[in-house]
Length: 428
Ligand SMILES: [Zn+2]
Image (cartoon, rainbow, N blue to C red; front, side, top):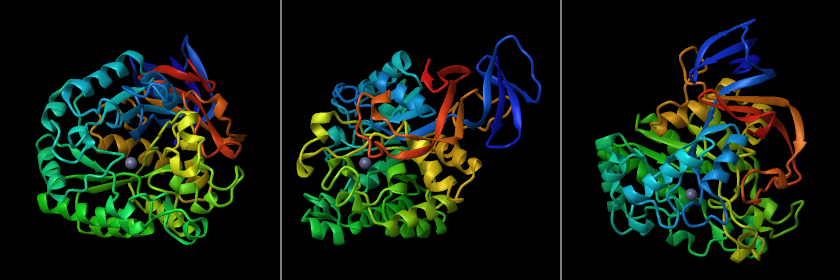
């Protein structure tokens, strides 16, 4: 098969020959029996998400492995890491293998299960990290995401333990006592609205502690969804020491701010903007963008968090936290980072494919588009602008903060080991 007329990382137009799931040849004027017209789209290595909530097993009313990976493919992803806060929790070899098998059977992209750090996400005793690492699911990323591993001794033990198999602990940095009942970013607006504040220090204190712990035991730490300017400063300091610390930022924290809770196209107190960690200030957004551009923050991860309507369309304090994000991620990154001149397409490929695959130790993904690489390819047209229409999402859930907002770009096609999962913007 030949994919005609694509621009690798935005470069000159070329054709790509795919054979046996790999890139066999790149150049102008390639001929073959089966061709797909890329229409001059930008070709990126298939995107890799380090932070996806697929909700199966347990909350199949919100998302399933099938619909979540359809959503991922529509967003240009060829692999996702499925978070462990399912029901049952993915804290044993049995459950991570179940998710891995669901991915093999129903996945429209590869599904790499994340294992829980503690049994039942309860923060009391370590889960069977070694058994999950040795299982068919070959787990390398461990996280209690949704909850913070706040016990310093447990966090230290987890960091020590994962060294044996080159794993990483991905921390949801939220000091629980400082955020009891917290509803939105602590600041001027939370004060005006009378909603309990979620202080930046609750995130920053845990990140600082965990950087120190990771350095102390010589292990690898990954920080989930960094949301404050102060967190960026701590990460910059930890990296300057040469410590093995990586971090992610979500698309929504690169674009949206906490004033939307007070005033927005969908009114005040609209829980569509309720998310963990909360939307922060314009100054935080600017710091996060600069950090992603200069490499202090390594990757963009979606934190795709599907919720059914009844959990989201309720009063603010009762609403679930989280937003779907897989199908809008690349567009939001274009809006926040590319169209602002902060990143080029090579930089996007690094932060949304190469580096996430490296952090997750995911073989076969995140490789540059060159001869010999697996043909995991995303074709993207940055020139169009469209209004976000949640009813067109492949995800089972619709809780997007971008409804009705005009965003740039469109995923034209996604190829998983040479097989199209999306063509002309539609699932194959
Ligand atoms: Zn989280």
